[in-house]
Length: 429
Image (cartoon, rainbow, N blue to C red; front, side, top):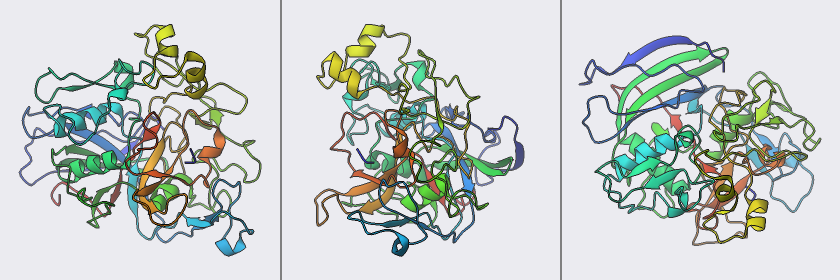
């Protein structure tokens, strides 16, 4: 498919003054562990409480850069690009400051979302697929569904090791509903902080069970943003700028080749980041000293992989819901996602894992691969995956997939990263 520092300086904490009780604590300072999910502290309310940390992206009105899809080069404009049957695209210019998730949405956060919006475990909006279970797919299954569980507890993290991994079975419609749950939820608090030159904001949000309207109207065939302030699925330009645009002028035309390091355009994978080595039973990254680092499959090395230690090795290596024999399965499914943030290699704006781990959705609608009208709504994606080589992390890797992910039902490397436009604070939410 084409497709941190340990020490932070915490700034002012904004606590809700609009009916929010004093028991609400401030969010954690930014850092790779800031994806922790918390339960509602008062035991009531409609939803679970999660903490999300975003990186602040400034330099509004930055220049765009031109690319030919999956070609190893960048150009000032499409007029400067050589003739090609591929359609040139300009990427990365954003006229306004915004925020984007420092980390990918984790399995634990998605489980809290599921239990909030589907407390009876009925799965009416197809927010979970049976192939995501550990019984159906021992190596990749992240979330289990127990029909007989109590209200609001039907969905569980399959094994504890999955909790801090990126949710990897996303499609755009799932992410749009996740964003609507945030948009309709209760913003409890925010904390601004810095780490080196990077600025972060951590938000505590009580999720809402309402998913069909909000930032996106899911009654529409091709939902687009309905508000100019709030949580969003990042656009292609917002995602690309956060991953590749260097406000200090580094890289080529102020853009990096990889979200992890400037690289050199035109050298193939010679300046690609180092590949992760994962603990074989936990998925934690064990070679953080080999910077820059990304969770992908190197050209002359093995795919990063692991399987929960509770699963026998032979089951992990053979059992799958796709009907593949062991040889074919081993060929197609190798790389597995790693713990979020543990590569410790930031983008120019302080995000982690925009290169490798999962390919991530944007809300940018694009014509299908054959052009013309289509009953399918196609969206742009970016980021590369743990199962693929370095070229999928290139700036020019402008992939596209139908928003409902109907073509890739057995693809366990689709992730989510939220964005924020405008300014959010507890009193204004």
